[in-house]
Image 1 (cartoon, rainbow, N blue to C red):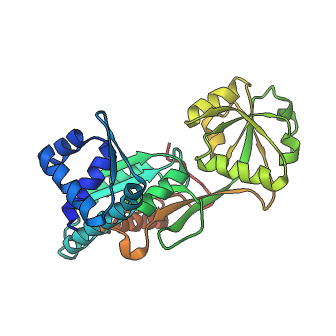
Image 2: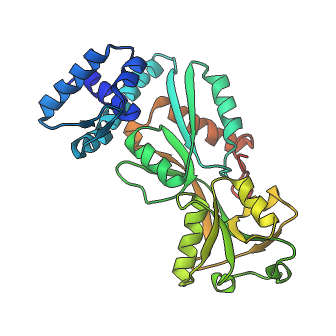
Amino acid sequence: MELRHLQHFVAVAEDQHFTRAAERLMVSQSGLSASIRALERELRAPLFVRTTRRVTLTEAGRALLMEAERILAQVRAAHEAVAAVQGVLRGTLALGTEQCIAGVHVARLLAAFRGRHPDVEIRLRQAGSGALAEEVGAGRLDLAFAYRTQADSDQLRSVSLTSEPMTVLCHPGHRLASAGAVLTPEDLAGEVFVDFQPDWGPRRTTDAAFAAAGVRRTVALEVNDVHSLLDLVDENLGIAVVPRHFRHKRPSLTALPVKGAGETEYETVALLPPDRATSPAARALVTLLETAGETGGLAPPRDGAQPSC
């Protein structure tokens, strides 16, 4: 098995099309097809189901994809490590982030990183914390800024950025606005909620708090961006339970503290692969973030969660 076979396989899996993958790899379609057939012969299993319109992975192909991506990521990290020893940081930094993450100003951090390491190509992907954790674990991302979704494992480790309490946001005319007290999940039973998709960190935090309290809630209005959520609450179409720093984005809304089982906290982290598999570019970014945190530049103190949007 050669590395080029794995590179060809991953490209076809991503594009779900031999012609597009061949164009992206700048190889002939016949050569790409021969490479995939050679890989299938060696593994003694078909990797793709081929149709006239596209190709899809077989069960064996899905099993191979995760390992192939991890192997290729480790090869890239090895090349970049040698370059770093020679005093040159180059290659690609593939970064993921959830929207409006606290504890780091992502745009400012990347601008500072580019100023120090202009030969590194930066790629940014925005998604929910669950998807980001999977992509770091599979080697598709070098690191991600996200909500802590799981304990550290042999494929994933975390560096804490900040934590903050959750807050209820509601329209000033809502019945809760005059409560002026700390709320519990029980106090919110029966309310209509505006929330993010289930993969997002704030949604996971809120779902866990309500489940621990044994309170069922209805998410009637589901969005995938912060400003749409605030607009819906601003029109008194529902209430939202969000990280505390969201209240600064819409001062016209009423913000009320909420507590649940275990003092509900929203913790954000930098997700990274195991230390041995962390790329030099990812190490440099984390070092820059930690240094900035000490000097008050790119990361705020832990008691002042600064959003990245």
